[in-house]
Length: 193
Image 1 (tube, one colour):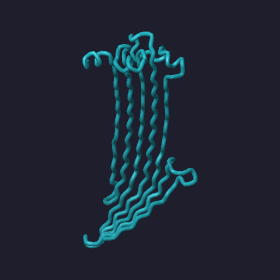
Image 2: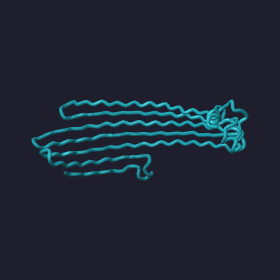
Image 3: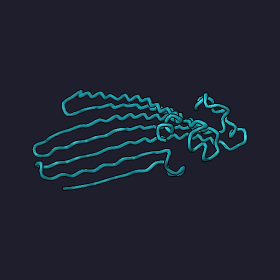
Image 4: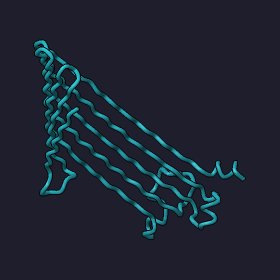
């Protein structure tokens, strides 16, 4: 009976998000611009789930009621600072760009479940009352991770008569995800057309 099955299940999914970003650009002299860009993002998740003692799966599997609870959170921050200079001399156009970028991310999670509860009244709000925890059969997991990425970059563009283009760039990045002895890498590029 799908209606009875639905009435024997209780759940919660709650999400909160906050995202803020902004930028400021100034041009102190003609052709020279500086820009600062920043953003932050924060998300939180909370879930709860329970099946009553009469739920078809708890009866079938002999669980005598089941419940789980989890929470997760993530944060990300970004900062980018750039300077750009443009200059035209006759048919020659030069663009110089340099900058710095910083990004950090953190994520964490917790999950637990339990079964064999003395009553359905607790739903997923008294996880410690299930007997599976006492017998060592309930599960709990958690983790946390964090990483940082820092970059310095530069680019030179040259254009002649709006027909020919030459570009050279280099980016040096350091990451906590790279190997311990290789946390910095340099990435050059050149193109012409």
